[in-house]
Picture 1 (cartoon, rainbow over the protein chains, first blue to last red):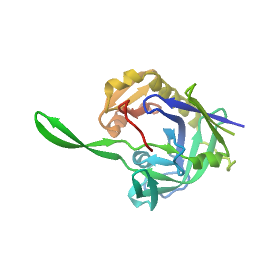
Picture 2: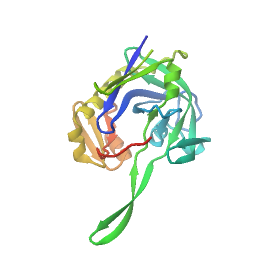
Picture 3: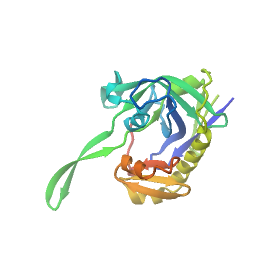
Picture 4: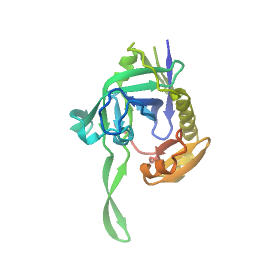
Length: 161
Length: 81
């Protein structure tokens, strides 16, 4: 029996949670040691089947993202090849400090968007860069053998087992 | 339930501090929105850094390991993940 609280993120209007993330397998890059771990915020996304981390997070873990194998990832804009980081451990902050080893996570690239603007009568186009997100997917819930509750009235949620 | 993993030493304490910083940021959205389009770092109940780049901000905050760093998105942004 355990319970991980989900926080309603007022800025993104998503449910999110705090988790620790670490490599479960060495050799992912010259600086990627097994002892390295990071604190992170994950958005809980019921549309995600494979937990995903931002490229920046993978790099901070010491992973050489360019050397990772690519996998097909389906999203709202189509199917694209994305790096796959095998064997990742995630620890959840709840009433029971619970960790799971996932078979791997998808690494998401920085989001880029072209924006057209009118400045001083001149039309300009600039690239806006937004950080990629960390998405906790259904694979993590399955690994925990848990159920999920969203309470929009209370703006609260739980992963519990 | 999957195999029981042993957490790295000190992880629980650090995660609690990080989570408290994330909760503070969530409860002070109006403070964050003054820095729209920037990366903001929060530690112990205050904003301790603002920058255009997350990498730059993290370098400046090397002594604040449990700081919560977030990009400040427009509040009216529609999300489709």
